Image 1 (cartoon, one colour):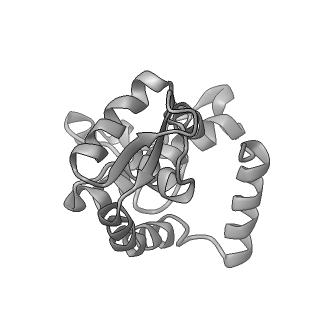
Image 2 (cartoon, one colour):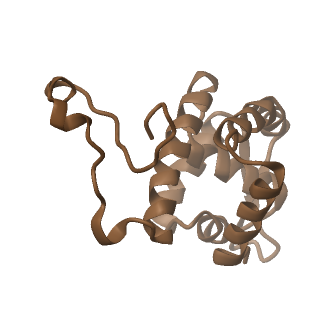
Amino acid sequence: MDPAGDPAREPRTGSDAADPAAAAPIGHGPLAGTVSYGLKRAYRRMIRDLEAALLPHGFTPPLLAALSIAAANPGIAPSRLAEAMGHGRSRAAPLLDLLAAKGLLERRPGPDRRSLGLWATPAGAAALATLRPVLLAHERRITAGLSPAQTQGLADTLEALAPEG
């Protein structure tokens, strides 16, 4: 999104920046005004901000999500965690391996001794506590142009589009 906040304009860089025609808004055709395209563009903006905020702490958004879900659901099966993240098991496994290698997550035998459950370690809980203000600051940045009622309405709408399972 450009600095003026106009979602119809994309910022120009490089040789385009010198071209006066490049300063004109770019049309998005039939995608303009659609919910799915708007969500995609907002997601790209939000994820870039979150990535930048987490990087100094050695985290990425997927690592934060995996640790957060494990901490909120002690003993969760890796497959359920992957499903909650919207990933397949093969994509979640390296995240879980990295969290375990950092000492933030433990795999323990499940109740049937054949399955594994995931638990956040005390170091994982401490990392989440450290990241909480980072996440809250990110939320404030991405909702800065919205009123509290708009922010709550957006949260409610997103929940209706993608209810928790």
